[in-house]
Length: 157
Image 1 (tube, rainbow, N blue to C red):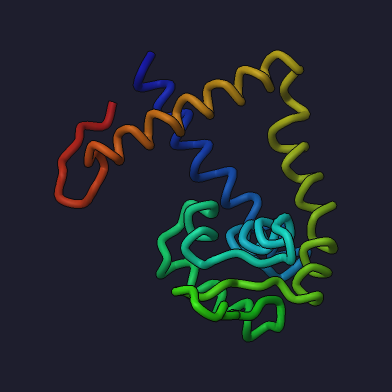
Image 2 (cartoon, rainbow, N blue to C red):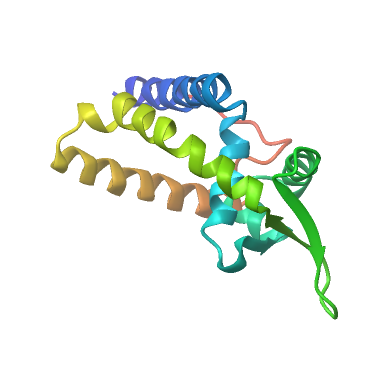
């Protein structure tokens, strides 16, 4: 049963992001990660957040996030800002970036519903939330203990 469950996790973590990327690129010309970063910024006061905090919220390395913010800057959807007396820069969603997120959101949400939530009832959605939160918490505990870092071997179920 573990192997079957694991293969389901693999299918979810590979096929769903690919489908969301396809929809967003086709309809809005952005990747799923770019949309996610802009969405996170759109939800913050002043549409801004320290890059290191944004990286944590986006589950990304600072390097990957910085690369994406640079692309968003070139497109006019974000900019970097500094705050006097504080280290690090902030990513700031521009008005054009907010408009892009707003434009892309309906198609994205329709795709998420069609691929995930339309196939689940309320109880299954609750279970998905509970299982997802439990897995994320276990991953955090494992990462803290050094599991899953480069150089460590592991056996896939």
